[in-house]
Length: 293
Image (cartoon, rainbow, N blue to C red; front, side):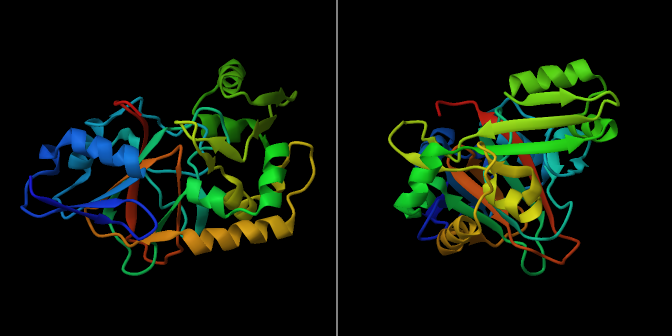
């Protein structure tokens, strides 16, 4: 297959651009795996793609698809497939984050598909967590080596049943146990969840430190649920530093119809710029790679 490679930006990733109108399903799988392991984020552009082709193509590289049980946002199921979800439940900006880093079990890999781009704005943002860590001040690195993040969330019975897609408390207890989440159940079956996690993690190869977490969007959208693990507040000056770094090193991906994006969720953070076009339609799949990772 005749394809062209070029960086997504000077900061991150690679684009795989179709040059001969061949099917994306004919692409050299081993070449894509090697590029993904090197760059962590790949953008496939210029291929004919629809939801079914997106499913087939992502299946070639993936296993253990998740249905987003326990996820923070409302997501619409596409074509009855619980593993293909719309990410358009609201239109404001979402700051850089790792997917589902408010629980232990995360999807190791993400796929995005552009069914319909916004007429303007609505870019997906990406950033390499290794690069982010390198930009953090030494004092903040020291702070993150000493303190972890603590998410504390209260829900009534109806809310947790809807969020986790289950009915019984014993099912919730089992899910929380697997995710290292402390669960308190009250008499009316309302609950309190507490989850503690690091801000920075080691890379899979062990050579790097990676800033990847859910800190920025949680402080943006629901700051009351997040503190350090010693219950101290997260300082405004710290958030200012992290926000400035994010804006400095973020890459915007302006979607084209049919684009497919492949992301390493142990290294690459993603987010979204605000938009107003209600016809914007971007889908996501959450999974693990079915290759050496």
